[in-house]
Amino acid sequence: MANGHVNFINFEKSISLTVAKKQKLISSRVALQKKIVDYFRGVPGFTVPKFYIQGSYKMETMVVGKDGTYDVDLGVYFLQKPLLTSSTVKRHLYNAVANHTYRGAENRDKCVRVIYAGDFDIDLPVYYKTMYNMHPFLATKLTWTESDPKELCDWFKRKRDRNGQLIRVIKYFKYWANIRDKKMPNGIAFTVWAANNFVANSRDDVAFYETAKAIRNSIYWSTTCRNPTTPNDDFLDKLSSIQKSNFKLSLDSLINDAAQAIETRDGTIAYRLWRRQLGLKFL
Image 1: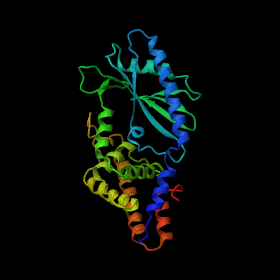
Image 2 (image 1 turned 90 degrees about the vertical axis):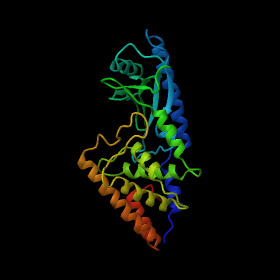
Image 3 (image 1 turned 30 degrees about the vertical axis):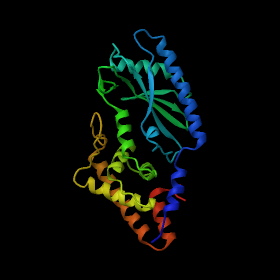
Image 4 (image 1 turned 60 degrees about the horizontal axis):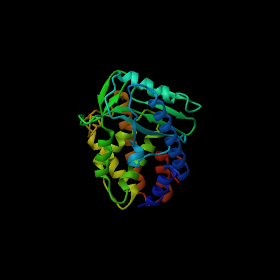
């Protein structure tokens, strides 16, 4: 059997943020937070917001995509309920950051995205949470909706293993999905699937393969990925039936190639099979 563990460890390093990228991200985040605070200090009826890094950065599962870019979620939290509509609050946030970078910002459905050209995007979902609320409320273009990303981060923290293999396996899935030609489930779906179906092994190639099989079995009858925390929504609700079918076919292809790569005694064949699935960064 060809042992690809070392190749996978090197692969994980090649798709992760470098120290330089992390430092640039941190300095950009600090400057952006200051811009937002300064703006809302001058707007009547608002308190100064608090901030919470969430999503893949907080979970340590972030990967750099095939185009060299990545997304970061920075929650903007007001600790009192705004008297304005959700769309108006989002518009204020957009106004605060619209000219912060050369590429500007986008007022999306559930966040304001600040674009750092050719590098990364910082997504700014905005919430309110008072002492009377069990969970925060997220501003969308239409309304306020209950949503708790911190609860999801805490859930994932309880799932993590001691040697970090689950985190690495999630990164493998996220990059595999990123380089597919067709629409795939988002990164948080793979995070939840992998956490719920993780099969540990002394080798990362085997752990990745066994976890992929377990995920495939879990969605055999219904291609869904339910949020284990508030608001318990389906992370695949924006995928069409055709896109879900394409994903399952791609996952079957991954599992078949992975099985051959692990079973073969020829390291060159194994390497080519993994590279076909994981791309040029798999060295």
